[in-house]
Image (tube, rainbow, N blue to C red; front, side, top):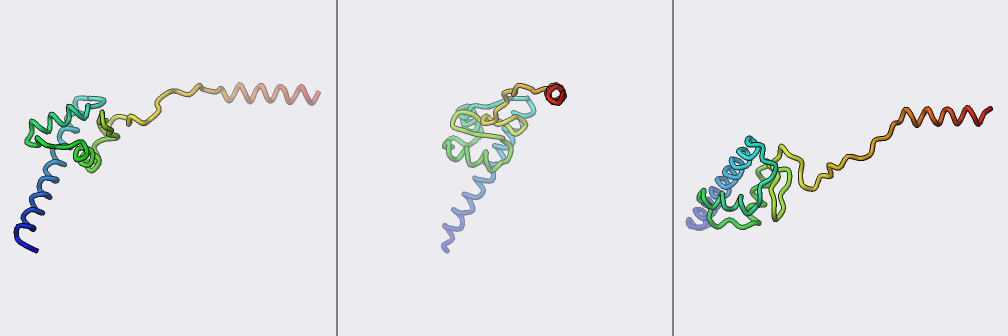
Length: 114
């Protein structure tokens, strides 16, 4: 392996490590400020202002997934880990009164026996 190949590989590794740390910092701030979701466009702009001017959406998705600090990411939004992901259904299902159902069934059973 040539020296310039080793140096290039090391530089890529350093870049990925520092990008991952910056992504974790931004997500930590978002969680502390109780931000429910961040647009990917805004996230890329923040990274651009912090020495990462040419980050692609794919690089961002990879870094966010590797960070473990987000519950979901898609092309439009990043949801911090302390919030439910965008793909989670939070609609409340209608509640069933099991006690009333059991009581009604018991009464109907009694009436059918008489």
